[in-house]
Length: 324
Image (cartoon, rainbow, N blue to C red; front, side, top):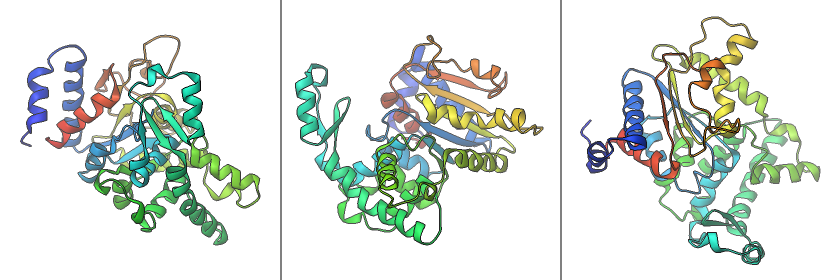
């Protein structure tokens, strides 16, 4: 692939330290795909609110990622940005906000994520009515689906099109829904839409069983991994830490340790972008070699860690892979 100006800049200037690690990780990812491998991307933090979809959606369309693991927040916030972008408020001086300033944002129905405030009424409530209909209709039919499947149904129905406020090509959820790529959403209950669903359960308007559980996600991932880990295998590109990364990577040791299955391939590429320090026992700050001791990676698995801001690093690596 001929490289564009962004990639040419990266190759010429990024020669040492974290910059060099970025290039090594990008080239390793590229080599993994070129060898016939597949890739899982995990999204922690607030990557959707950071508008990672601008590059991630194209990665999905160009078959640079085959499965995604993300938090419930990242699942919903990409769609919220799609339907309510003009109502978002940016607060570049967020470090100077007083508790009274923060209370004023709440009173105005803004929920702040660092320098960006999500408009509660326009974003959450605009999506809520359409999701509720999907939940209710499935329950009436005696059907159950995963959180991402309900969101796929919602965006593919066309019901949200009148609300679009960004170019839909920049929505990674829309790109994923159109290709129907699998998504794993561990801990979906810890999200706004998860909380909204719980409220309907408490009001006896929905049954908790209508949305499939985290254990069912692990079973779903196990089946997918077994069917896709042949040949070059499946790589793991981890943005941040937390449950979005730890949940899916554990599928490998679960299969051979807890199920006793033999010849389970390790993850065949690993890269983590994180600004967490390697201390305090944190998962986010654990270096890749630690994962060898947990049976997630092999000793010779290509391993990369870029200790930097994922909102800067991930789009640059994606730009390299897309030839931008």
